[in-house]
Length: 82
Image 1 (tube, rainbow, N blue to C red):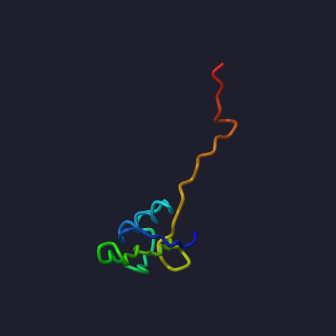
Image 2: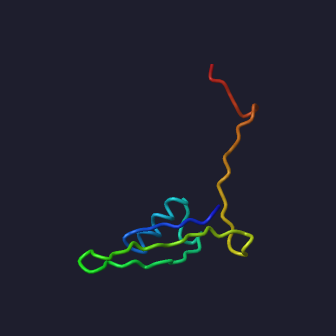
Image 3: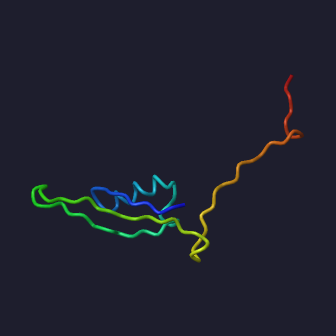
């Protein structure tokens, strides 16, 4: 998987959005806060928070990200109800 960058009204909102996009939990990604954002003065000069999320992988020595296997039904497992 590749790293993604997300934006939000807060750092937590940006992280939550990124985790949802990757379909991963917080423990399965490395999080880098690029910009904490700012509310500005009366909304003027406000900036969104920006975070970068990178899935952990076996190559980096971190816990691997695994996907659940889909069971395969073979011909001998199939039974007709006729």
